[in-house]
Picture 1: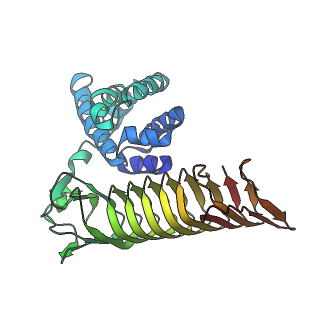
Picture 2 (picture 1 turned 90 degrees about the vertical axis):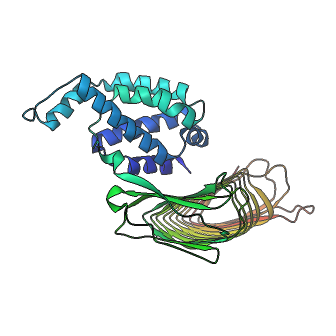
Picture 3 (picture 1 turned 180 degrees about the vertical axis):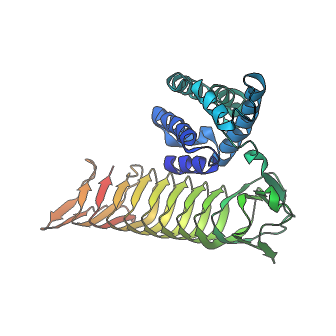
Length: 391
């Protein structure tokens, strides 16, 4: 997950606030990201944006109720909107921003769940008066399905959903989901047969979040499907095959071991971190791609109008990136020797000073090659109208 994705998820889950208050909160979280200058660390400290938003909404409800009981009383003639405006007049934004920075820095040094509600959130709510829909946090109920015995395949056909797949202490798979309380007698559309779980979207049923919990040593052959406007988070799984077609999605994959990966992405954010992957094939258009601290056996990427960040990765056999109208940044693995092959047409190429090889330039094309006889690893970039930076 990247900063923009985290802030967008937080904003989406706080949509019950009025626009000005919502922007204020997002501004404060943005300032903390900028102050820390380490997005991965901040996201690890903050935890899941949906959980953070729920804690904020729940505690705002408690605080607003408390303030209404102890600080102000009003008649129906006074009006709810006037009551909210009086609350906002008491708020000194600059003073709170400074306190916010200080509290955030102090209180998020430990894990989110241990400090968020007890420390920072308490002061946050105390100093900021919100006009939140008090019933908002009570409109959703969590439903736990029956256990999913011997789960080995997962098929996803989702739109406008939030799905998290991760390990749990359970000895069997379990599906939970959060829905509108008005729909409490309905269920998430899914089919489980012969070890295969199929999840579907239902536009008439508002599902806030779906959680699929798997046992510590799951035997998964496949995760596949089609996603549109979906937030998908997968952590610490071993899977034979991962095959997804995604549009307008946020994809976060952490600590995975996968033999074969096929991703078709359009207008997506992809965060791939600390994973061990075999054969990887990606086709991306208008995407933000972040690949960090991964071991990749063989990877092929076709990118158009994309931003790629590749840092601290180990390439075993080959990496081939074909890019058009894209911005590519790749950090060399200086622990291993690799052969680089670069062909860049109408592009800007910035090479690390310690990357030595043979270069040639024609009127509009730049060629670069290195020859390392003691290495069979090939890293190849074929670019057009792009910017390539090798660090």
